[in-house]
Image 1: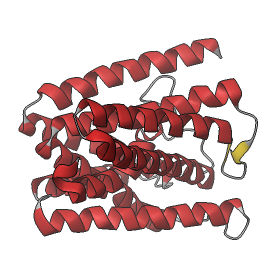
Image 2: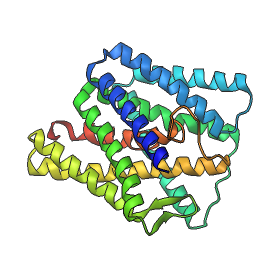
Image 3: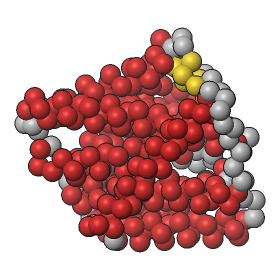
Image 4: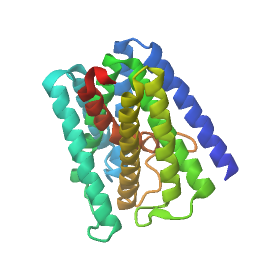
Length: 274
């Protein structure tokens, strides 16, 4: 268990360094190319979760998804970009309702390959538009968002291991606890308030950003639980094996994917206040 945790931390650390470097220093075109390649890998893993067995079909879906993501990044501004973000927010609200119904026994997840393939686009494309919009608007804010989700994920994991007693969603992901969730939300609110004060936003901005951070922490948990549910549907433990110590790329981006449209919508709606 200790070696697995060490491997997890090492892999996560490398990913953080690479992500920070790309966000902080990469030209927009190079960042878009790297993002397109990453989306291709994400889509490839998703075909595994979608139980698509034909190799040529998996490659085709991955290429099409990467091209769609490139198109979203190219045309993410204005009304079109806002529409994509709203679609993402609406979808994750629906996902939260479905998770609640599954946990309470009111709905049983049983999705087939065509539905899951379309669902993959609902997960990936709004998040791509959100991250691209934040990158172009303010790289510091995008970096803050990424750090926020990383903190939420790490705090939930280690907080749950240390203090976890009460299960959060036994029918979906038995390892997650309410204590881990509480630690994650607390850590994210603290980080958000500190960031707002460091930017000179004042008490009002700190409260608003603290609330946004808490909402994003909840959204990241929804994303985590939803991917866990999809894994159960496919009878898989991991989405892939590209990241040592992790359950695939989706294990690292589930929270980022779920919270990104929501964060971007709120951030741009707040305008200069934040």
